Length: 336
Image (cartoon, rainbow, N blue to C red; front, side):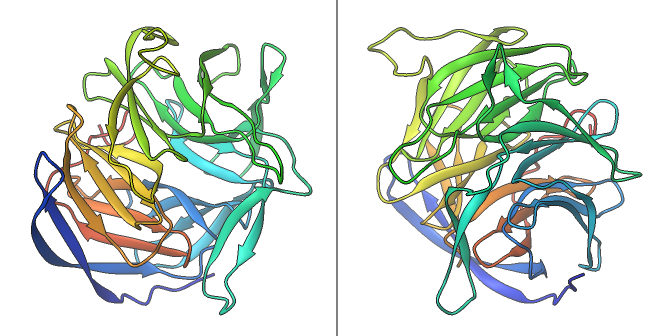
């Protein structure tokens, strides 16, 4: 059990023009809700004001109360990585099977480096939030094992889209994929493959566009959705994975999970640079919000007007709250 310290810190909002030039820097406060989390990810703002999230290094689905107290909801094992509330009120988990970890010399930070020595395989799990009991609903697609499911989103029909980033080993790594599935375990489709390190996934407000963030390249792709588990794909050499390259600014950074604003902007958690990159639907960078943690891994929106952002600063194990300029997109089966 951890407690809230309620620390307030300053962050920088970098206003950027269409050419990527910084036009203005604004300082703003953010609040640390709780500390001591074991590489948090997948935050979900619940209707009672608490935050559900996964702790990848702890192997749990945890709940952070309004006062910052953390309690374990379910002991999932492996590496729970992404989470979303489904149409039945259950919490669906992308479990990547586990990592080996590198801890900083001062003991303050940690980061994943390789596939776990006791890797349990990738899976999609379903958790009953009332009891903490869970079942595994998918471990493969057409005989191909899931390797490292990462992030997940539900569409308005109640079906789930998720990324499988794959696993990294000392000398090789998997080629990732994007999947679509029914939440009852009856059907799963491989939608896009291969895809280099697909991570964050989201839907446009009209659900006509699928967004996927690529970790290693720091790129954001878009795909036109044409049916259940179907997207339109560009042919090579227009695209290496079928997607439209929406944003790539270069530099030393990686993209992680994402959330969408009600107006359509895509908010991508950005590693190494340590912040949130806000990208317009046409691919331009609206602004970059910088924090002090190099592993800003995910973001969700909450409060009645969805104008508070809850962000996981995973290297140091923090959950952060910050007032947001624009409302987030209401999620199907949660706050819509």
